[in-house]
Length: 620
Image 1 (cartoon, rainbow, N blue to C red):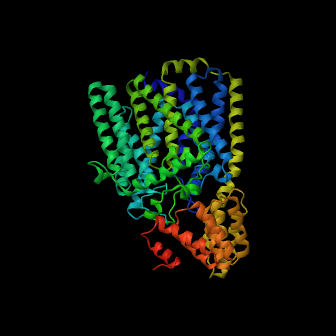
Image 2: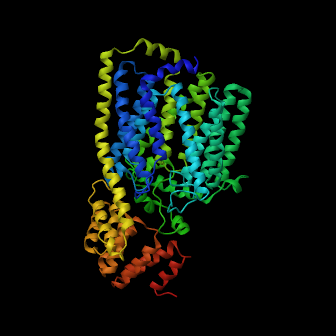
Image 3: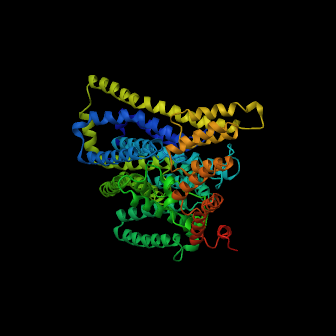
């Protein structure tokens, strides 16, 4: 059956599919320069709104087709529900619930993010057919055009936003060159591979070539190897499967040679083999520290993990001693830089296994779809599966950023959707013969918006508070100027608003409290920081602030107490140990002072801090 024969199925779901595709695009493209975090918080809000509205459509589709649900559809639903339910249990077991649900600062990988992503995945799996897959590719083409154009603007120094950006200027709408280059690689790969399709117009071909050229320049100028890696994985995977399905013997040769190249490339990234001078980067080496720390977290708490999106609160306790000696005692990480390790470390074995099984199932169904399909349908399936494999490749070395992840989940759902509808003629006959009566249509029209609104009401309330906390925090910092009496009351007003916001993330409240402290309201600000520390006793930033306040106030016992807590959570922090040794000595605790100084000498003997520790010990 041709693609055009399938196109008449589009009418009943036309609006919701556009909402899915445009909503996915908005999640990636939108940012808010008037928010404390211009990227992640805003993307989470849009994700939840899109998922909330699609929830009604999703439940309506299950309600309408309940008796016709296939074994494979039930299996997909089972994987997703297992993932979500186990993630919910891990979230409820997380010590700081607001982080478990909303996610950590500038990450937002909490339960709600994955809830939104799975709703989008399930809806795509229930609705995407060949016609809608082509529409998806068209949308990707224009999103890639916008992202690459904005990236080139940033590279040329003509960005309309003045970012406080420590990275390469090519951050696009994602806030980081690694994220930007990876997503551009995924999207531009889809666009380039779509040139194999016969349905392209001359204009679409022209746009595709333009997107490829612009994306290639932006990725190269980003100085991020992630984009090049993802692009290579997608193209190699496509070439292997395409040649294998078309020319079996040549395909086997391509697969074999590609496997060798892939192996040598991996060795090169690990600073071994002939490609190491081209592929090795220190940013890849440092990921080993992140991965090993994540694995140690998982082994420490295998059932529930250390807490959903709580990696940063445990990293310094589980990091190897070589990390602070090489990169600095204060440097930390808020993510394992590997989605699979991150889920095992923070949410436990059941969540991690459910996620792995779901992705294995998607891959298996994608391969089966390609082998069973013919002509254009096979090419479409191969394009989507190749891009999905590219997304998985970046997931092994990067953070689960919402702006990228939403495309991975839509791709996965689209693959399942195409596989489910592989028997196109049968699908058509079923839909034509089972047109609902007018009465049923009225019921459906009431059910879907009613359910969507039920989901949207709490989402909109939550979004209002989250957005308000982000914008109030931004305003508090923007107006802060102790020397300007005209703004002396404006900044504290917004800071107090953040502190009173029940859904403001802890870090924003901490920043607000620090601002109030610097504005002169020291007693109230200190009490707020103490409250935050009691709510999250593992937060090293809270403890560090309390150390500075107590030392400024001359409360020696409190200073020692806070530094002892830091020592337990950050055992390889030689700076903290040195200050603790000095405080012990000042407090007349000579034995504790000597023991602490000796700890520094045991793991940091060749550092400047070790020399200071020797002075504490009375050695030259």
